[in-house]
Length: 89
Image (cartoon, rainbow, N blue to C red; front, top):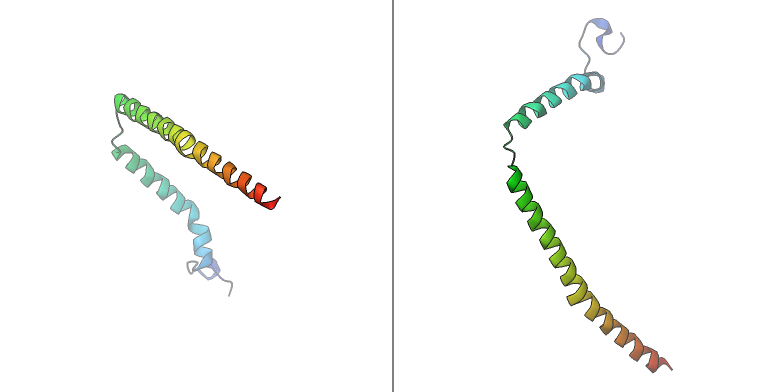
């Protein structure tokens, strides 16, 4: 007998998984739509406030990492390399 539904039996294993994906996908999308209806979305002022906080924090840490860490560590590295270069001569 041929595998799958040729003998009137329902397909099993890999065949069932391959043939069942459209139905599972449809059910998944239906479930997603139902869940999205239950989401409590933030108000526009909340979105604006949190966006401002994120932007301020990003610029603050960017300047901090750039000016307080990167510049001094870069100068320290230049100093070490200059000393190393003089020692090699």
